[in-house]
Image 1 (cartoon, rainbow, N blue to C red):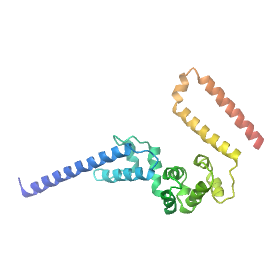
Image 2: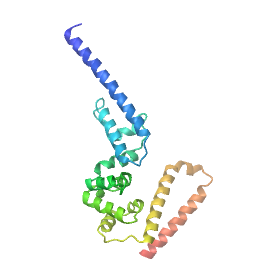
Image 3: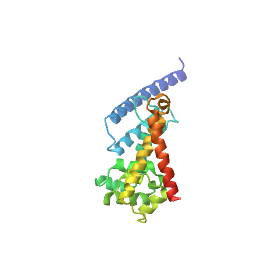
Image 4: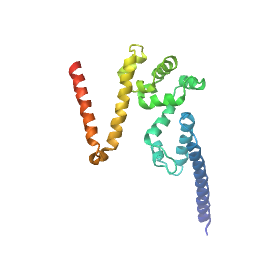
Length: 214
């Protein structure tokens, strides 16, 4: 065997050993990820970021989205977006998280919902609102961008009745999403008539409200 061939063989062996070591690290990180809940997003973010970094050694084009298809890592695209929202937490919010005034899971929820809140000035305003007032993130996430800006500037007050309406909006959106996922079942289900009657009643109600507000 020539000297060049020996060097090439040695390099291949070293690369294989290195890859095996990387895969072992990734396996340990996956185990660690599965043992944690979504109460501390910052920790989950650091685990997934490290996995992406290690995977890039063998797959240069590996991205955050690639985690969705990673074997042994049960995670959806929505959860990936949610966890990686942590990178947009500003220093002020991070300080409040460390002071236990707000948790990072709460912050990441609204960061994944609205890109506006990735801007420090808006994020700080919302964090203060959540800490100082009784505001549900689910209600805020149903506001339009313009409504959210007015709310954070103190020009829009969310009344008790509004909160019920915002919660209803979220519930209805969730129901419609689940129905869409089960579209094929509806075609053969003996209960589909009940569903269509409910949809008809909802349409009638919406039309009635449109006439009233028109």
